[in-house]
Length: 569
Image (cartoon, rainbow, N blue to C red):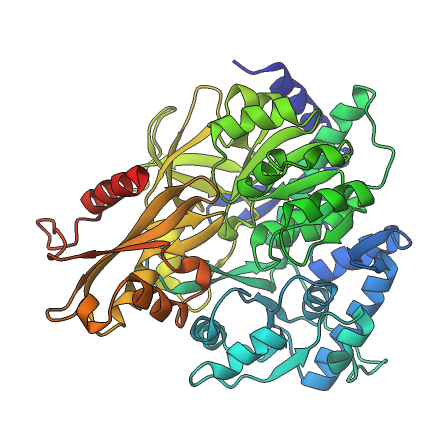
């Protein structure tokens, strides 16, 4: 039975998307049929930036420490970056240009400039170590990489990788930081026309195979994905206005997540352009600093992994800060414990809990659970996001299951990526003949159309919203000459939701006496994979690991046994 809020949301969205409405729909043809799209959305990111930076020209877009930049100032620098890339670096349409940096104003302007130059913004994971960065750069054949100092050093140390690279000091004021790039700006350089079907971005995703895959999205998909979130915001704004709660200040949000993640890229950064929303950057997550910034900058919307809002909720100094401008504490990337949902609602004095579900391959678009609906169904990630998203539950053969049937969650929308870079096999394996992306998450739709995620088909651990491929960590363990067998799996963790754990059987003659213990293995892993992927606990097994009839390691029994040991510790 639909709740009152569901009914209001449906009626409001129907009005927004009706012919003549602000978000009136059109159709885009695909081989399997037509998909709905928002007609008012610009066809490409360059047009999107040009339109909204002109509309909100004098408003503040970026706040980073003492630096404050308007939409117009940001756009002017992005134009200089775009011209420099074309005229000074020879970037042509479709060339991949990597960004390997921590969050900063420079990151945002480089992203804008790359796509305005016709390049493909390739978002390299700033937490990766040298080998991981090098593999990704080679995999997509970056024509140029722009990096901050620490990441430039890692890339330079990557074996066999020598990309064209520009190093910038991103902690300087924006114009100074970008000087190594914009020094090559030629004022009369013509920028290429960029269309809806041109490639716009590559983001990297780890699946069960362990190797990062470059997920390629076209301009239409990224812009429509942004408008999917904008439509949700406009829907809730219309409801708030009808209730006499129209906002009176400029919308503002904290940028708490790394910009190489699709949530930060699309839902936070890109959506802010259309909303005229202020982006308040945090160099590093800290709950106390987040609360200070919320009060000082009158932040109206908060989104992060569930851990972040929980740390604010439980912080002993929360009472010192006025958080009343925040309307929603949103989360994504990992499940939020049911108890957290209840406490957020009861203890924060007004801000409502919200959770979203989407993936890199869907440009973060999928489902959302809002406010009182979330309280009613706190274990659900919500209904498919109107007006663009369709969600189906599939069996192993790809056939749809009836309502309530448990299977693989699949998402179809105009926002979906076009495929994995130079990997047609992986692309074909995850996209059905009728255009659904198979998420690898297992779940069901209840009688009200709400999505419930019950498990994962892919062998991954989600640590605080960051996907970790178990096979990648296992491969890194096997690179140690003392390791004979290894199994990696998730362990429950109050702070991060889950963290990686491992069981290792050493080769005969190895062990503590040979200097190989848990600390030595963790140190070895730290040299080869990002720190967040290193297991928090490694057990050394004196006997060979159990195997199934197929001779595969029995990870289910190992996971159950060692999860129980960890819980009892």
